[in-house]
Length: 95
Image 1 (tube, helix red, strand yellow):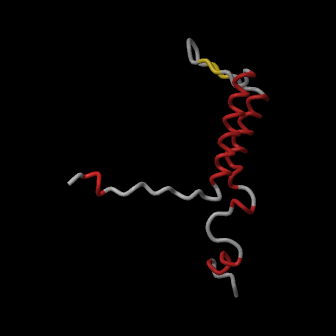
Image 2: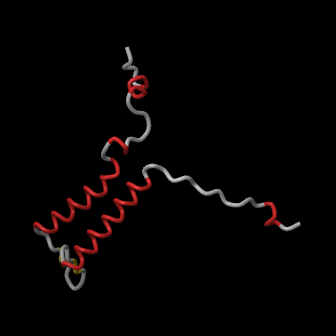
Image 3: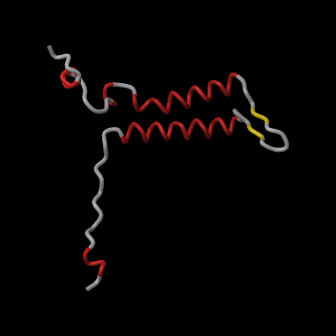
C-alpha cells in the first residue's frame, strides 16, 4: 500500500480578524523603509569605520517604525482575549 494514500489533504487555516491589521502594518513599515532608503535617511557604513547618521530625520523614522509596529494593537477591534463585562468577571470585579 502506498504511504501517501494515508495522508489527508492539508487543512486551510481561517484568517483571523487581526490578520488584516498586522498585514497592513507590515506593508506600511516596508513602504516607509523603502522611501527612507531612497531618500537617503538613516545611512549606515560599516567599513572602514562604523558610521551611523543620527539626526531629526532618523529619529522621526525610528519613531514612525515603532508606531507602525504597534498600530495593530490599538483600537477596539484589536482587543485580544477577554474584554468588556467578561473581563470584570474574570478579575472578580462584578460585585
